[in-house]
Amino acid sequence: MNARRRRPMDVLRCHVLQCAYGHYPWDDWQRKALAKGVPEALAGLGRAVMREAFQHDWPEALKSRCGWHDEGLRMIQIALRSPKTAEKRWQRLLETDGGRGEWQDGRWISND
Image (cartoon, rainbow, N blue to C red):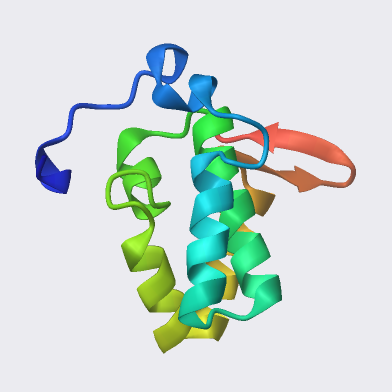
């Protein structure tokens, strides 16, 4: 199926719920990224972003940028081409829960 034509992911009916521990899509992505030459720390960060996009049910457009519609191919490409940019973007996504808010003075401030 063409990645651009996939339907939105229904978190509650997703194939991810059938995965065995250590074989979730984010685990598979991390192994693939490491095999392609992505540095270990950056591959771990990318894994965390991919996992959080699913577990926190980020918006579809953001899930797409976090590897859910192309098996993380673009994420690997940016990690190899521009690792500092990838690290900065991915860290920001984690810090803001996909742009939903951020911590200020020890309190979570929502963007809603």
